[in-house]
Image (cartoon, rainbow, N blue to C red; front, side):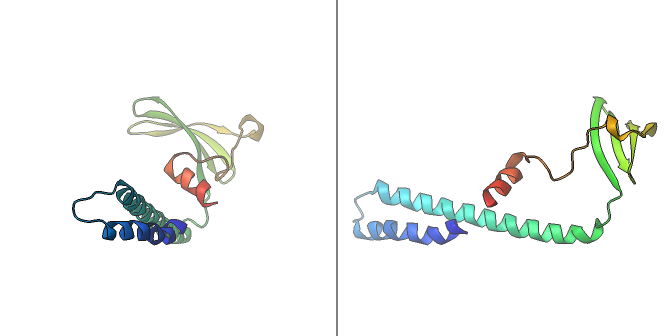
Length: 137
C-alpha cells in the first residue's frame, strides 16, 4: 500500500526534470527516478492483486473444507510412482502404500508417542508466499 502511495511522489521530481530539459539533453537521474517509480507501481499492483486473490480463495474454500477429518501427515517417495503415506483419519494414524494403480493399508499405528506430529500452520513457510506473509506481518 505504501508503495502505491509513494509512487506518484517519486514521479513528480522526474517529471519536473524531464520538462525542464531540452530535446537534446538526457538526464540519467530523471530516468532513474521514473524507473524506480514504475517498479514501485508494478510491485504495488502485484501485492494488491495477491491480497485480494488470497482473500477470495480463502473465503471460497472455507465453506467446502470446514470439517476436516482426514489429514495427510507425511508422504515419502520410495521409487518412481511408489510412496508411503502417513494419514490421520478421525484421530487414528494409518500407514499406507501407494503405487500407480493401488493403495494398500500397511499398518494402523495406535501409539501416539511413536510419531512426532507437527501441527499445520506452524513453522516457517518457504517460497514466495512465505516471504510475503512475513513482510505483511
